[in-house]
Amino acid sequence: EKGGFPHFMLKEIYEQPEAIRDTLRGRLDPESGRVDLSDAALSPEFFEGLRKIFFVACGTSYHAGLVGKYLLEALAGIPVEVDLASEFRYRDPLVDEGTLAVVISQSGETADTLAGLRLARDKGARVLGIVNVLGSTIAREAHRVIYTHAGPEIGVASTKAFTSQLTVILLLALYLGGLSGRLSPERARLLARELVEFPGLLQKLIPKVHPLLKELSEHYFRQENFLYLGRNILFPVALEGALKLKEISYIHAEGYAAGEMKHGPIALIEESVPTVALAPRESGVVYEKMVSNIEEVRSRRGPVLAFGTQGDEHLAGLSTDFVGLPPVSWEISPLLYTVPLQLFAYEMAVRRGCDVDQPRNLAKSVTVE
Ligand code: M6R
Image (cartoon, rainbow, N blue to C red; front, side):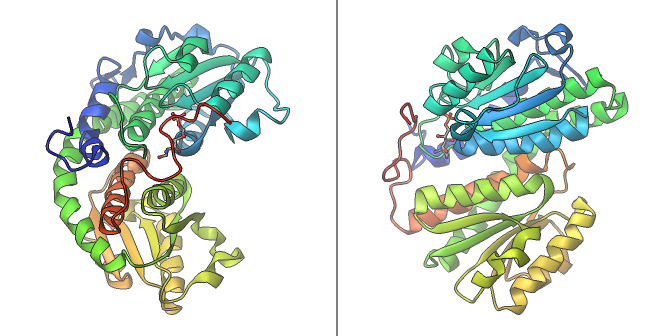
């Protein structure tokens, strides 16, 4: 059942190219760049009069929502708020008929997320679910559902469900970007082509970087504290990388926006606190800022494991360890940078003898508060 893999989590990490491909299938035409969401009964009318989007979710699905804010605001020009479902449900969020609530859940059964859905619906919002489990409660109660086609996810740590959620959010951003006219047809075409080719790229990349991450885990597995830093659209990916490490290896890991370093976390830096830094060279001004952050960490003797663009000798030279990844567009970078962080967390947990698929105290589906 694990298809020759020692754990479901590893199998599911390796299944991501297929999961992304299945999630894209029939929904994106790379020739025209056009997105078709008719399988979710979505047409432009559903989005008429839309003034604001709320993403509501928990855990890893919440991180997908955070990425969604960057994508939808940039591509479609619609203001986006992202809320943890457990916070959203107990405040009085400014939701009305002009609001689209996008509720993200792998299981479709998470109690807080379901309560958030009902609250948004009762306040008159349109509710769109991004759900993996067919016919689940959230899928049934949302006005519309875009299914992620990740297939069953058994490992408690969400991997392929997350990257499939990111894929749906990219489709939604392309769709709404087209509707709003903010996204040019040329850019849409380029992105569509890159997205369709991405599973192939990932398929080659995973077996290539896996041995390297395994080797790195040998250096790092005894550490008890990690900082994960990213900026802009890779800030949520840093949060997700830290969550993955803590939930399966029980290592304390904090994700931070790198620009916050001087506002507190830099006080933690010393030889025994490694920093994982996400710094693609294509990220423009933010790249320079990440480089400065890495220098600051190194000058305080903090080890840095950097993930950046392959061939970036400057970054490789600055960092203690470096993992090079192919250059991709800003929009696609969360999909790419997530995967090596999953492999790193996995190998760290295995090295520490943890029960990777069934971490202590956690359940796959959190159906109670
Ligand atoms: O099924 P859901 O997507 O609603 O689940 C949300 C969280 O419980 C889930 O993502 C959790 O954080 C994972 N264990 C993270 O790997």
